[in-house]
Amino acid sequence: MLSKLMPQLFTWVEVHGASRNQAYNWNSFFVQNESNSVRALIDPLPLSESEIQQLDELGGPTHLMLTCAYHERSLTEFKRRWDCKVLVHENQVDEVEFTFDATFADRDMLGDLLEVVRVPNVRHREEVCFYLKNHKGALIIGDLLSGGRKDSGIPDGKVGFNAPEYLVDLDKARLSLSMLLHFEFDLMCFGHGSPVVRGAKEVLRHFIACDAAWEDFAQRREEGFRLNPELRKLHRT
Image (cartoon, rainbow, N blue to C red; front, side, top):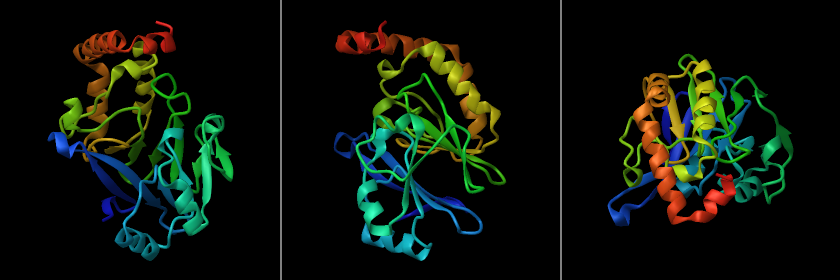
């Protein structure tokens, strides 16, 4: 079932890790502007028949968009079903393996609804998030950060990294994430993990400023390299 996070923002989930008693959410999003002329699916997971009916009642999607190329999920199926436009970031073009209709660039707007924000030097080269402009503001984040998830020890209402060994560079990642603090938002939601539903900007500010957390990420990153030396070669560290 689609759940409403804000008047213009809905989500649906797949639950992973339940068999290990570490259940956490994979998330997808549907956003629509006030005039209902733009209706976008972001990082689209499979939908149940009842969820499809809900979307049809909302008018059906006009656009499909990804935070990163790896979140293609059910995009091709939904493109066929609704004949909506597939938009990818210009940095995603070399990564995607599906047909798309157009590209967008950093700080582009989809209608008057979503602003594209590219955040480099964190994980994937083509990673972007989407800023939803409304009275409180929301950030839709893919793999840059995780929300609350038991398997990674991140409490609900907080943010963190899953597998910091995949981060490009900790200092660069910390600096890049700081750019998100230029936006006004009360909600952060993620490709993986539970959303931060209030006070999200302060949660992110505290996360970026917490030296102890980043020291822990550095230690976990080194341990990840020890277990998988190929990652060290990938990052040339």
